[in-house]
Length: 202
Figure 1: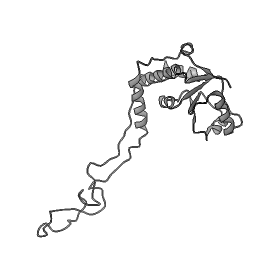
Figure 2: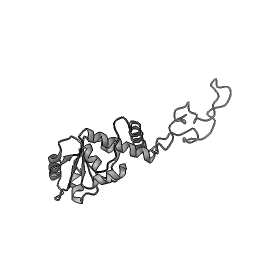
Figure 3: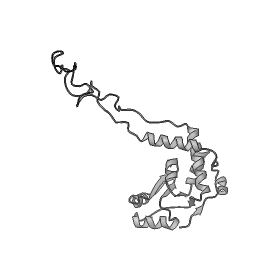
Figure 4: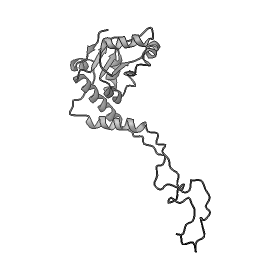
């Protein structure tokens, strides 16, 4: 199966909006930071002295023991007591403006094209749903160690064939993100998915 490396001239003809290497660094950084922050559950939690198990009975009498005065054993200085300034459930998610997302996409697509890492192909499908056939199809296009294939839609048999191939990822043109584009050594765009990317970058 033959594939064609997308050039800057081809990208212009396809109405892909790109930016040069002098622009968009911060946008890419902000977007990647947001992706990773949004994956955090923020569920780390420690109990305060008001939440640990136990009662509020005074540990021992106030005077005459020679020890310091204490009330409850739930105080932070005791084993099994509450935690001071420990982690509490929180929301780590970040919002990135639409224009920043678009700028980051333009920058990454431009970098891929300038590095000859973005190829186009008319169609991609594995009719028999076999992993061996899938790997053969991908190897006939590129020998890169990590491959991202972008199409507007895939047949169910193609999804089945790709399940056990860790170094290849399938993504749709409407959903593919900047992080996925950056993590793969070769990006293959199938058919009309190029127009979808052009609409997203416009």
